[in-house]
Image (cartoon, rainbow, N blue to C red):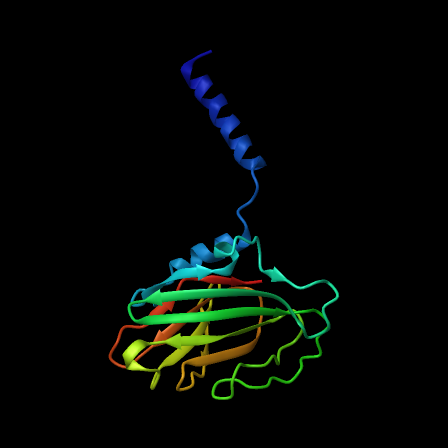
Amino acid sequence: MTDGDRDEDLLADLAGMFRRAEPVPEHAVEAAKASFSLGSLDLELALLTWDSEVDQGVVGMREATDTAAPGAVRATRTLTFEHDELAIDVEVAVVAQGSSGDPGQGGPGQGAPGYGGPAGTARLHGQLELGESGCEGVRLGLEQASTTEGQTRAMEVDRLGRFGVDGIEPGLFRLVVRREGRPAVASAWFRVP
């Protein structure tokens, strides 16, 4: 057997090993593609400084029992992102299956947002903290990663920095904060189950 034969056998063994390996999870492929989005080269990154999945030592989101009433929150996750004087505190709450889509109550300027989305979707609400500069004139977007162009949903921010949106379908998202005369700041990507 020549060295060339041994090389071919080794390559065949390696190829077989890779064919048997688990495929890359779809969410990992989605995240990798989103990280190369050319439209985000001018954004500054707000770092994830708190994640209830990690920092509370739990695996997965906090889950309610299977007997949760239709429309009740099934699972929640709390995240905090920080960049200079900017802090973004956000809670992602997934509603139990069987919800009739209770009308939302509250929202920016009216206290904590209520839930108004269909079953299996999520509610995202939180607060921006901007230090001395305050929240006047701040624009906030929720951007969803996709294999083509990211889709952005504008979110209203009240004078106290509160925001909320219902009916979020599962996927990969980030928050983008825009202020006049300042570079836009984006959170790290996070998954909504």
